Length: 243
Image (cartoon, rainbow, N blue to C red; front, side, top):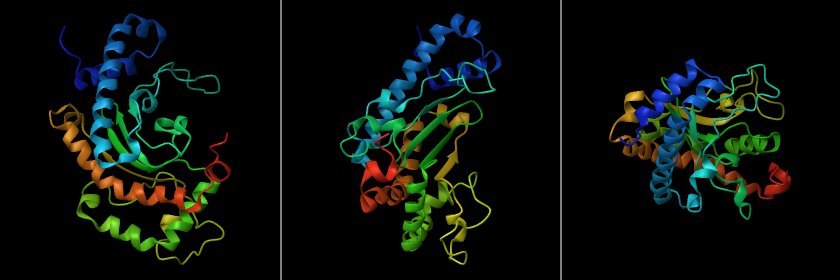
């Protein structure tokens, strides 16, 4: 049997998007299992490469980073039973909390999203709770010059440009200076940054090399955002790891 490829994963996901029901999925379960196995192998390769540039990821396993394909539809108007994408999120756990790594991490990490026509890489911290979000804003106010320096790097400009703008307030939040030099940064409700990947790029033989190059560009900003954990400390009481 030919080895399953990333192109096969995209083909399966494309078919799933047109037939997102349990009957079709059960009839194509063998395809899914092969694609899942290939994505786990891709994630392991990704982790092996990432750990060389970010040692905080040393203990992560693929199963910690990959989302299940089954959707929780109990409280959703969208009753499609399956996710139409594969995603993996290598990100470090909180100290002493190994179960908070990967997809459960509140830290900045290295998200890879495979979905036909919508593949992407994203770094940074998504959907922080109010305490963490406030801490991140304070850190940016105190050290905005470091963010400027990171964003001035050619590797950063090649892939990202700025923080994502999907989740923003209309005004600078209360308690922060509306005339701050980078007031738009304070309006963010998430500190993520992303770059689109074409289907052709993720299927290319040099995809992992390209992906790791993107990760190298992302690491300084992840480090800046993640430093907030070390500076503010008290992981459980500040940022909700005790829940």
